[in-house]
Image (cartoon, rainbow, N blue to C red):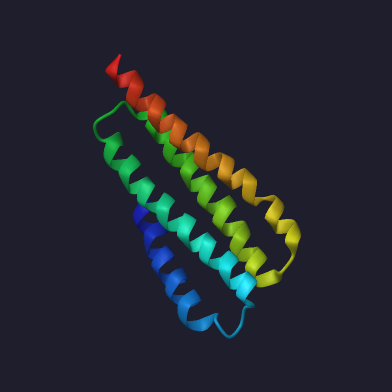
Length: 117
């Protein structure tokens, strides 16, 4: 899934850089770019989580990946919709995605620590 999200990140980033400059306001373009950046970082994180999962017990590591994916969908997804629609209510979903990111990273740490015990 990390590779799938990375491929989508490249496509969405290129689309934003080339096709949206004339379509979105500078504020909405900045929101779109933030969505792409967070999607990139956490897609890369998914690749790392998948690699770590090869060497650590899967329970916490699997949940880490699930929460990172949920974060991408909720955080970046809500920002993409906000950028295109301008409906600020979608911004209320963004923090839920941010919390999902944090939970995902914490679960990764717990999974790594538990293996060492």
